[in-house]
Length: 135
Image 1 (cartoon, helix red, strand yellow):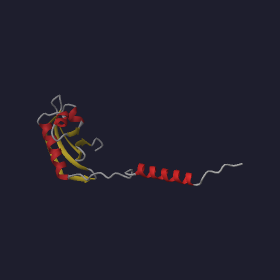
Image 2: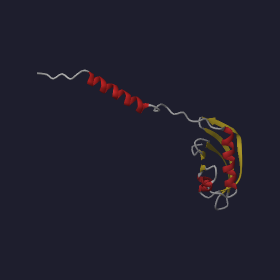
Image 3: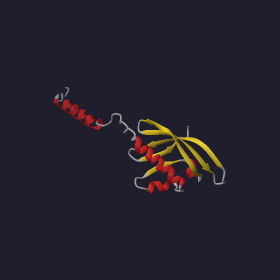
Image 4: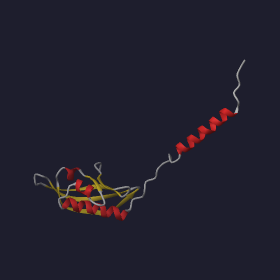
């Protein structure tokens, strides 16, 4: 003899499973980046470079208000920034501004070097200035 389960049980379980899956997948779609605020990005880059020029270290900008997260190996390696020139307006790319900057640096040994580098500047959710090491 074969026991037969009432056919409402599997349907209820299936509906409950579907509802759980629907709730779990809410908000799982692709997240869109907030577009870069170009004016704020320009101000952030300028402020970071001016602080470097005045002798600040990247950690000082983390303590500032608003906080700026900075990554630049020359800066954190102890090079002094003697001069800088932002070349052009930069290019907004999604959540970042990509900007070329001409730097005049002085090494710890006292040697001067001029180089053109690329910075990637973000404005959301926090202010960031990262040196693009690939360019």
